[in-house]
Length: 379
Image (cartoon, rainbow, N blue to C red):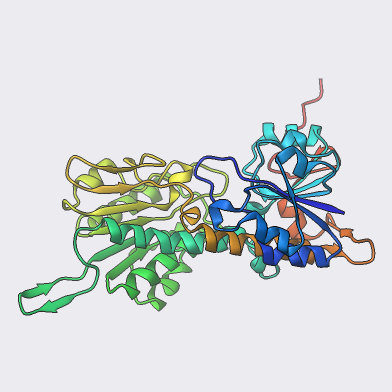
């Protein structure tokens, strides 16, 4: 079988779906691997490194995809029309119903890695976790670079520099890494999350928990491990608590995302106006529109009262070497988990919860329940 790795063309995308390490292991499975020229250049991987690992270097996407049985990508390839019918595409699809219909019509079987269920078996292939971990770290580093004062308390002969106060909104993988990183830098850290289970995780990292404690918060997490969208009344109570905390905070890191939805707005313009000049907001949710009302996705801006809002997109991609290394391993783990050695091909049982959760299209049909068209009422 032939596996193709294409060069990413989306704006701000610096990652690649395979590394020389994973190429060697893919070839060991019996696959021939084709890598589009320049696919790893933004991740400091030259074509020669892929060639040394045994991959064929294709001149362009069409050449890489020609005859491919499996395609690895970070995002849905712009050239997905060149993917052969019957091929398996493994990527972060981000597909809506219309895109899924197009892929089904093209006969492409699609595994959307962002839809993997949050179960123990899937942890080693969970791309959201591996990338969010890096995003949380990078957000704190970027915020520290934009902050005009120091993070730790510093006692000098000329006086004492107080520690920075950091408030993390959302204590998923990205938020927990942000908490840990800010603590390592010496900041005083507080954090909030709608999930009651996050309270102990936040405290275990040495941060103070800030949150609404009511009946709704007890059911704020889905069975799949994602945050559930909360009621308007709950969001109002949370907003009031957040407002009081933000007003005395130097750096805010926002990480709140709801799978398949626009990011909830948790930091308003009024909240930003209450912050001291020189304060910083790093919005990890900027790819989904942002948690902060003043976030401009893809940009850094300074507000009228001197608050810097970092709206960078693809935060993990700001660390492309590490991000590609982890992402490529996620994809390799997925394929090897479902690899049939006797057939020399992937075996994707429909009843397996990982496949049921991540497969969008199969054999020309949309199979994911979230994207299937609603049945028409009988005449």
